[in-house]
Structures are given as structure tokens and as C-alpha cells.
Image (cartoon, rainbow, N blue to C red; front, top):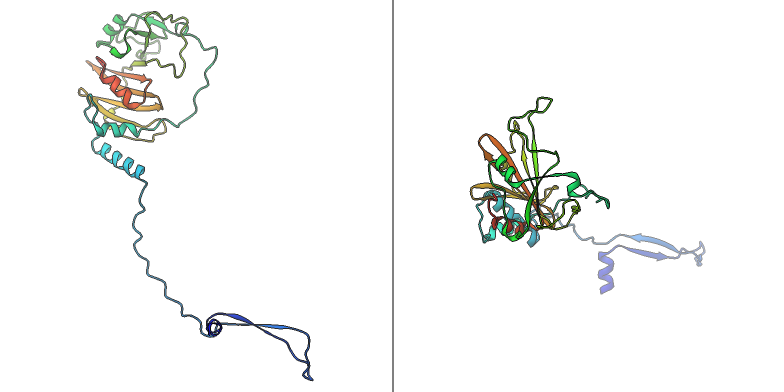
Length: 278
């Protein structure tokens, strides 16, 4: 019975042996392919249905939700302790992937060989505002450095080509007894560094247009508000965060930036424990 059902529904091959004219065996075999006696009817294809949306991994869903919340509230006011929303945003900032790290020279010059120290009081008087202080670094001292020798130029001074002077002062927090002529800055040395830039005649970028971007090639970044001042937070390396803000003194616009040797959460908490920053 099973064989009969199989022959009636499946294609198969018939074997036979042709006979000679006188009816004797020919010694040759012949094969004939036999199609199915009763082929199964083909079922019509099912109509295309709604396949829906593929679900993301739980981590990706959480990241997408966090980004949406950050874009909806782009510059939240922050204070210690940081709230859960800000902590989630900072946790998702990815380090920079753009370019390669520069190879450090084993014979790199010292700080004292490439820059000139300026008295902090003179720099603050010239700027018109106090430079940041961080109790966490005590008893470290702040060193103000400039590549060009001599005092800071008078406001409104012009270069020989008629362009206004652009001033950049480097900030470096070091131990009280450090010798700048022997200090060589290395990546990952754990020192807090920063800059103050003044570019008269050039508009400072409007930080209010910055939005949160977790995977920017230059480093994931976001924006928060500290004491009414908008502050940008960018993760440059896994343990290096750039924090920047603007200061207006009359018609002059300054940009202050710090490179904090911590991941974003620790870096922002470090900033909030400081004074005059921003």
C-alpha cells in the first residue's frame, strides 16, 4: 500500500530489459523516467504581510532612548549630584575614532624650553576674570604659559600686517616644586591642562547650536548648563574629556577649554567641585 501511494504521488524511474526479435533476452538495460501519476496541486503564494520592525538589542534600544531624551532637553542645568538622565548621556559618549595618535618623541622638549611663564595675577588682570581653581588638585599650582616672550599685548594692538593680535594662554596645573625646564608633557601623565583663547574680530562659535552626538568621529559630545553658562563636554580618549565654555568681558569673547584626565562623568563632577569654572 505504501509503495502504491509513493508511486502515485512521486516521480520515479522504471527499469526494463529490451528483448530480441525472437523473444530472447538482449542483455541490455533501459531506464525510463516516469513523472508523478497524481502530482500534488501547487498552493498559491501567501499574500505579503506586514513584517513589522525588527527589534534592536536592549543596549541599542536604551542608547536610542537616551539620545532622544538628550535631544529633547539639549542643555540641562547640572549640579552635584548629577541626575540619572545626565549620567546616562555621559555614559554613552564614545571616544574619538578620527585619525591616529601622534607618536611621542623620546627627546621631546620640556615645557620651559617651548613656552614662557606669565604671572597668574597679570593674566587674570588682562582677561578681566578669575581663572579656575580646583580644590581636588591642592596643593598643585596653576602655571600660565605663552609661546611668545614678554607681557601680553595691549588690547587693540595690531600685528605688522594690520591684523589684531590673537592671544592664546596655556594653563597647566603642576606640583608646587615642579621644574618646568625638566617637565616633559606626555600623553596619559594625568596632568590637568587647558587654554584661554582670545580672537578679536572673530565670532566665537555659538555653542547653543551644539547637540548631543554619541559617536562623533572627533569624540562623542553633549552640552550642559552650569550656573547659567553653556558648557560642552566631549570624550576625546577613554580617560580624557574636553570641557569648554565661553566668557564675555565687555565686547571681548574668550573661550576657555580644559582637558581633564578622567572619563566624562568624573570630569564633569570635577568641574562642578571647582571655583570660577565657569
